[in-house]
Length: 499
Ligand code: NAD
Image (cartoon, rainbow, N blue to C red; front, side, top):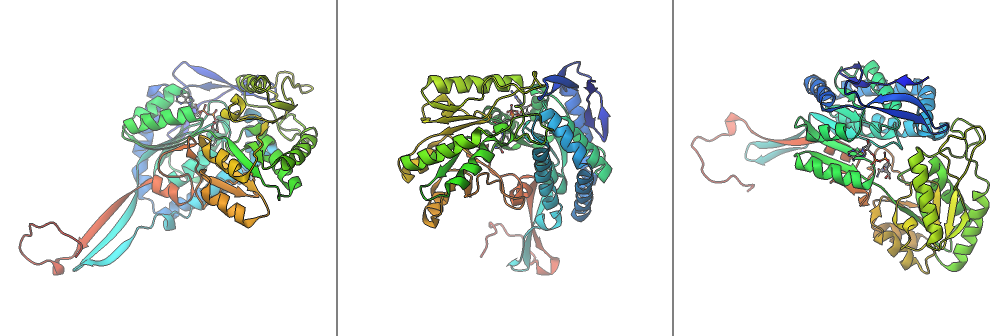
């Protein structure tokens, strides 16, 4: 049965009124399982209006009480984990264990954000001048918006909304139109935890809804995660409308394997990080860079062996290593890129094109694909594939490997596998990429550090979560104070200065 979805505005579900709808598919079967209203400008504006009305009272609540409400929300999400994870898998296609991880990594940031009383503390200087004290306040921006991708439908909305709400803002979320059901459930649970009506809303939709948020003068800041071209568009448009923006884009993450690395460990890490979640993670490793021909030959032999053992299947089947990709368009694009790799002369060691899974002929399947002898001019290297495709680019020396990672236009994540502290330290210091793993293939920082890529992977000044999230979602006010006993009579016409 096809479910009818809604928006969530002012603390309740709101049916779509634009007359435009999209289908939400189950990627394992290809069937439509829900109908999603696509918001027009009026619907977006009503969510923003509800947020404007609700925000001052929310901001006036002391941060510890806001934090307690967030902790109650975390508890509610945990109690509903099974249902949420199944719902997430049914729209995204990732395995159940991976969906639990998606939700869990989001909750960790909400838990961190519940420490708002500490994170919102300002600074204080006594006797900055004669009888003068200075202190700073961190105040919420007001109404802020989040625009999020399909690949982490729980984690990224939580990374954005947790700190924003903790800081006293109202939040309007425009989730991906591919998997909107979990974000809608999160909205219900925020309400159940005690977040006042209007403080967290969800408007579903596409470019029309996004543009309405970007152009609304009442929206003070926009947090975006998605592909690079859209990140650039959102960053430029938000800035043109005077908004603060942080926009995270696509990725092409490399893993350098040094001759002294434990190659079995490196191969396992490449298989997990390259093919997990069908490669649809912004921190997935899509390029392996073995240093030296001997390392390359030994690594590729191990990868080939392991790739053949992978099981692609239904997201709820216990033996699936990964499920389908998100849509038929994604499958066709990935298969097209695999064909281009063959045409460009890369060596195809495992071919995932044309995969079928028994009982699920309509699913969007792509099998694990492994290329060797990929070169930087090939389309499979230049593009983010966002599918289960791992490319081996052989480097002659450590310097060549470092240069390859640094010269790549993307700069989200990178890893080095080695037993040598010197090369690891040199690599971590010199590589031009935002997040580095040393013998860690997916170095997603924990909630109390910040997450953000460089170059074409991130636009804006501050990272997500950690202390940066509180800087992004607050503005600083500085107060200079002198009490009457310290004030001499008579006007002064010179510019006050520190001495
Ligand atoms: P996407 O860019 O297609 O969509 C992201 C969001 O933008 C969605 O909400 C979508 O509705 C909206 N959108 C799409 N086209 C738009 C347009 N023309 N105008 C305005 N809004 C538009 O990305 P996706 O396919 O949902 O997600 C996959 C991408 O996200 C990959 O490139 C992946 O690397 C990236 N990603 C990056 C990070 C990171 O932290 N850097 C994290 C997760 C995903």
